[in-house]
Image (cartoon, rainbow, N blue to C red):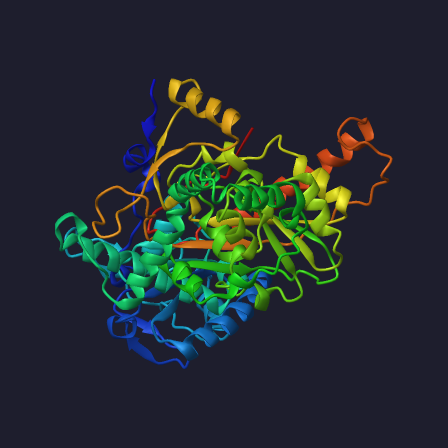
Length: 542
């Protein structure tokens, strides 16, 4: 077996089928406003780009959530009129319905709404409860509201395609930022598709100056791959030239054996704040979402998942300031870690150091975290092995038995921070090889020999969007930083790798981390807009 192209396989699966409803058919002719007036539904929902159906009944749990969602809803409505929520009641009585809607600033489907006849089969359609179109849709897609439980908010775009079935969780976690992410992420992908459909091979030089600069910034980042070979060849040429042999050898000796900035992280990362990186961010676009504060008095190992092909989300959010990391996490001095081999290459080494990167070694992690409170390292824990698992619309993490990062956190007294880049795996098409195929065997041997993996992938061209090339597809990436997980204080005399006591401690912290990462995934898996139903589970491997 030589493997399969995963995107083609997904195209035929049920998970890749867009879920949609007819918005007006679902709500009926009229809606009940908070002030008691009746409004024409088509007029009220006209020009809305994101529409949410709020399913619930009058219970203590729903009442607690209603107030929080109402506060966020009001803030969103002050900045845009392109968003609306419609309440679909699951109350058993009209009295309960009337009490319930007093807590809501959004319109509702009337409880005693006349059942609308379907002209084709002359049947009647209920407007509220389990038998309503939205209730049936939710039930058939495992999104049903459980009576007495937390209210359910289903988010749809203007065409009736499901964006998220976890709208309440997303609103509570991300507030006003959610609508901006949903609207701009989907609009960018649709504009890209419409533009490509009109031109042969998708030829385009960009619809605007900003989009041209976005493509150029990502292209310059991507050519670092061939630049590695070019810089090595140029250094060899200079060594063989008798006029430049001495200075080049002197530089290499200093870089490889004297300067330890790649371990200590003491180089000033002045390139992080360049405006250039905002174009890189907006190409996809990439967004950084904060779910909890990071105390500047603490130390942290921020673990990024998944690796993807090139960890674009990690680069934009942690190697640059484009996603406003300093403003969202004040007092935290972070260092993104990468392969030690990268710091052996002239030119590439200086670029990475001035971006604030360090090498992903045990020594580097401990040196950086010893700088004191507010120190943090960002580690892509899956590494080269996880890169081989990259498949569009799939989320497999090489983490089940990988515990080195836990031992380093305990040794340094640093909290673990689970972080997930939703959409990281979607920006390239990949050729996925099964583990029993010759293709995977070759990839595995190459990783062992060179220290990095060689996934087979392609994106789009710089000018010809439909021709496969190195540029990633314009698909949104949302990087969600979770809550820090404290680690226990352990005596330095305990061997965390070999002693039974040490193994037990590491296993307990590792299990807590896996649970926290899965919870982060479950709470935010639909934040990236794709119009597709993602796989329900996060899979741990290795």
